[in-house]
Image (cartoon, rainbow, N blue to C red; front, side):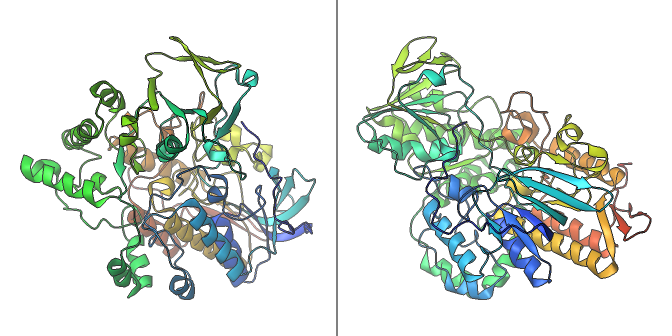
Length: 566
C-alpha cells in the first residue's frame, strides 16, 4: 500500500502534550471522533484522541481523488446535535464534494474547539486491557503510552485501503496512487496515459474526471458495478427551505427511517404488485430523481428475485441506451449478482465516458492482468504503456481498521484471534472479552447501510449515555455478555439471509480481501429498528451487557437475547 503522505501537515496541527492517564481515549478524528470529544466534554469526562492524519476529517481527509463526493444528499449528511450549526452552515451542492465536506469538518472542529485534545500525525499501534487496573494501555507509533478507563474506536468503516495485489509494482517507472490515500499535492494527469484499476464507487466517481484530463484513459474492470445518476446540482432552494423550516425534526425523521434518509418517492408497493407499465414508470421516476431511490421505490427490490430482476433489467437497458458501442455496453452490464447487493454507486456521466475515443475498457475476467511492468500493465493479451496507474481497489472494510489497532482483551486474547472465523459484537458497539471498549459503527451495526452521520450521532449518544450510567452507579467495567452477542450475531445473519445481499461477493461480505471470513458484516434490519432495539435495551436496564462494580462481582443482564435465538 502506498504510504499515506503526512509531510504537508499544517503548522501547529498536532497536539504533542500527551497525558499519561485520561478518562477516555478516542481513536480517530473524523466525524465520529469529533462528536465523541464534544459529548464527553459535555458530561465532564476528560478525553484525548489520536489521529493518523495531520488534520481532522477522517475519510474526507484521505479520499481526495478527482470527483470524490458524498452519495447522501448534503442536507442529510450533517450533524444534528446543534441547532446553531444547522442554521449557520450552508451547502452549495445537492451532493457535496470532498473539499466542501472537509471544510465542514474543519468548521465544526473550530466552532467547538475540538482540536486541542487530539494528537495528529499519530497512529495507534496497540491497545491492551490491564485487567488488574481496569485500564486500557494505548501505544502509538510516536512512542506515546496512555492509560484510560474507556477506549472508543472511531476509526471508520472504510479507512484501510487494500494494498495492490498485482505482482511487479516495484518495477513500474511511472507513478501510482490509490484513491483511498490520494496525495494532497496535485497529481498531474494532463497529457498522460492513465490506467484505472477498479470500478467501484471511487473508480466510478473518478473515471469521468480523469478522462477529461488524460491523453488516454484505460479502465481495467473485473466486475461491473451498478451505478445510477446523481443528477447533482445546486441545492434546491425550495426543498432547502422546506427542510430548514424544522431542521431538527427533519433529522429526527431521518433516524426513524430504514437507511437514515427517508425516500421521497417510495411507493410502499411490491414491484410485482403493479403493472409492467406502472413498474417501469416507477423505476423511471427514481432514475430521474437521483439518489439511491431506484433501490427503494418499490419495497421488495432487495428481497424478491423477480422484483430485483426487473430493476436490473431496467438499468441494463439504461446502460445500452447511453453507451454507443454495443460490445462495450455489454461489458459494463452487471450479471453475476442481484441489483444493489454490492454497494450501489452514484455517478455523473460514468457510462457516457465510454463513448469517448480516448477511453478504453479492458475486461480482466477475459484477459487477466498478469503483472505490472516497467512501462505499464501486462494482461494475458498484451502490454499497455502508462505514465500513471490509479488503484481504485477499495478497502479492507469494517473489520480491517479495528484489527489494525492490535487490540488485546481479557486473558491477552487478541481481537484478530477472537474474530478469526468472522466478527461478532453486540449491536456493533461492544465486544465480549474486551471490557470498556466501544466501537463506533462496528460490525453488526447498520453502519455502511445508512446515512453515516445519523449512525455516528446515534452510536456516540448511546455510548456516552452508557458510560454516564457507569459513572453514576460506580461501575468499573462493562462488556457484552457472550450469549447476548451470539444471539445478536444470529439475528444479524438471519435477517441478512432473508435478503439477496448474501448472494453477492461484496465487501459487505469481506469477499474483496483474500482470506477474510465470509460474513455479512452489517445489520440490515433497518436503522429505525436498530434504534428501537438500542433504546429498549437501555430502558430494560442494559440487557445483554455485563457490568462489574468497583471492587465488586460481575452482574449479568442477558434478557436481550431474542426469543428463539438461544
